[in-house]
Image 1 (cartoon, chains in turn red, purple):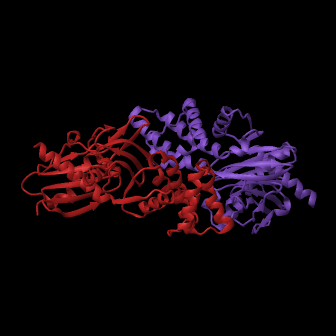
Image 2: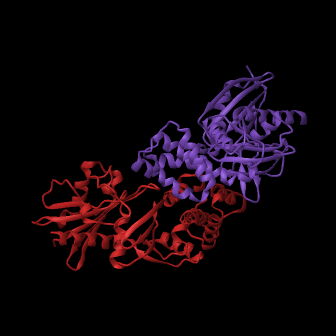
Image 3: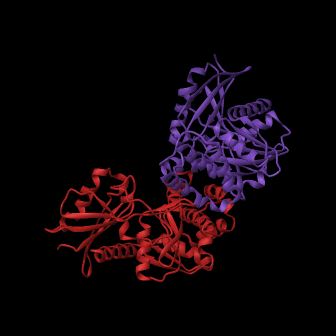
Amino acid sequence: MTPDWIAADWGTTNLRVWAMGPGGVLATAASEDGMGRLSRDDFEPALLRLIGPWLGAGVTPVLACGMVGARQGWFEAPYRAVPCAPLEHLGLIAAPVRDGRMTVHIAPGLSQARPADVMRGEETQIAGVLAGTPDFDGVLCLPGTHSKWAQVSAGEVVSFQTYLTGELFNLLSTASVLRHGMGLGWDDAAFDEAVSDTLSRPQRIAAQLFGIRAEGLLHGLSPDAARSRLSGLLIGAELAAARPYWLGQQVALVGNDRLSAAYARALAAQGVPAKTLDATDCTLAGLRTLRRQMETRT
Amino acid sequence: MTPDWIAADWGTTNLRVWAMGPGGVLATAASEDGMGRLSRDDFEPALLRLIGPWLGAGVTPVLACGMVGARQGWFEAPYRAVPCAPLEHLGLIAAPVRDGRMTVHIAPGLSQARPADVMRGEETQIAGVLAGTPDFDGVLCLPGTHSKWAQVSAGEVVSFQTYLTGELFNLLSTASVLRHGMGLGWDDAAFDEAVSDTLSRPQRIAAQLFGIRAEGLLHGLSPDAARSRLSGLLIGAELAAARPYWLGQQVALVGNDRLSAAYARALAAQGVPAKTLDATDCTLAGLRTLRRQMETRT
């Protein structure tokens, strides 16, 4: 089995690869060799550990997106400035490789001058959305460690905004005083109430976080409710800041886990229906579009 | 040298003790045996390591405040509910000790039912403020890992509110994506602008945090400015939430470090002059008041 080409989603913590044939995905593999743990010389061996068995006699092209193209990554793929199409094959950067059985091209991320913002990886998901819905005109929300909101119109990313929500949740729930009394379960009512709290009075977020601990000590707030409340307070604060993005707009969520469901629930409570697209599907569709652009060029 | 009594400030991360004589402090000692790293049976040995040399033939009373009285501490000193005087010797809890050369009493913290809140240690500092200014009527701000704002009137704590500001700063500056490009220096202008940003538009805090990283990548925001901006955004958000406490009020800060100076600067920009009292002085004054109450009782 030798694939036509190989798609790679290479983020800070993970590397996922897909062997692509004429009919679609032939095989897939993944490792925890994310950009965050690799030095410059480690990238090629990390990639070969996963795709080595797929390489044949010819030269197989690899198309990668994500933090692999950051300054601290394998090879820097300079940001493209919005407004612009999310992906453009002319922006691809060839990474230097020693193994002659493959070429590696890295997709650049996007930047926005004011307010200053950057993304790497999400632009590929956005391109995937546009591949499926070329006339999409509206707002995309991509929840995650650093969730992104993007305004998309006429095939271009017009503007976007990043929120630290996911990273704040991870740090507060595992490394702050709030870690005492955090459960693993979920409580819809506690989540809904918390979203409403910070969405209506965002200035109170700084006070309400410690309140989770105090409610546990004094009034027996359950660990599951505490976790849901923390998530709700942070997502509510994000929605308060992102209001110009979603108010009166068509919103699509790009995700594949409980987090996206939580965002959809919070938006629905504000009267904003949001459909959810699978993040992995979007990444693959985006890289596939890029691959087609390259072939057309050749 | 045998002290009349021993004062102890026993928090989550540190233990500090003072040998007290008729004229004041005879000696002082400190260790990193904070409550957070001790099991129940470790407290007495940890204390004796510091004060052992001070104990004589008689029985020396030790008066302690802080997290040592938490449920996970040496011995639980149940919270006293506000409104109430910050300290009251009748609320003292005797910890069980094996060494006959000392007695140990722990000062209880304060609780507030709605909004749920708790403090342990700060009540002693507040008592110290009142010892020096018995007719203090106004607002105290005690910056720190968990900063507290307290409304004090007629010798009682009327209400209080805790903010996670210090812990958020520590986590974000050392463990989040913002740790890249964080300096150790300070930039007043960057701090001032950030305080103003979140104080006037607190709903944007979730977006502005990631902006620090993006400004560094795209526009060369200096590491010192990045650190000052993070501090300013978080303190601004705290001030936005604490506005009912400080607006048009007499405010005194209880602290002893650069953090208090930053709060004073932020408040001054809002036209609120704040005097600063030394936190250690206040803790000692509070424990001294408690000691006098005990002697009067005897």
